[in-house]
Length: 383
Image (tube, rainbow, N blue to C red; front, top):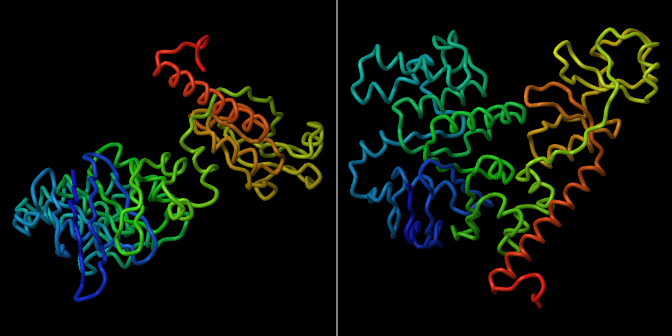
């Protein structure tokens, strides 16, 4: 657990960068700090490992004031990941990852063995271990940075916009990899980002900070989206928060529609025989790979004819994924796959919206029932 108690940081005679901040990052969870430029996100993070000293207040880890701890021991017990990874350019990947274990007195063989385990854990090929940072892509460097931070198995992880310097596709991959690793290791993580979508995706709880380091709201992502505390938080979270909140609602068991499909290599006559303007193509494993516009087929179907704009929702996913699949599909029919990625049917946006309405009606009915029960009333004598 990381706790801030009335923490303030000022520089000279200027206004506070962080002002009387009190919050608690729970053990084994990801707590995200998000807010506009100048809100003190990074300053707050760096006060945990004392790269910055608070002007007043206390920062504690598992009940111990960090100001009373030996600085070297404090930092060696905290994994720290920053933008651009911060790797040592003159060391190979394996030696970069092994840095902290070697500082802790591990033998070279043990440190390298641990480094190789982590290189694979973060999704890198083992043959990259002998390369130098300059020989890696930006995404690969960030993975090495995460592996290095995990090398000595620290109980606490600090991550300062670690994925902001890579392109959107790689960023998505890194986020998914990080969530996978967190599910396996359960680190107490404080994560800084300027991206509210990233905060909501990664955080068990999200702290929205105002300029000057004032805490505006600290809540679970679904609470932040559904019940922002004031106009500042509502504006910062975004006007489409109602749509994004659907990501936290499990997909109901909607009736799926049968959909005629084709395989790669289907002839124009086979495509036209389906009788639809758009036909869904599946690969050999029955996974959806794209839509084909019937009018555009003048040769056996190959991948150049595939329209890949539509997303694929999983039957065990969220309401948002189902709605997005329906809205993004060029045919207007959202593609749904089973947990293994095999196609099982399609869904219309109207079906999903109806399901959303049913969910809300059921929630309101449940709240009303709880309200009458709280006053010892039943449905017959409720006011």
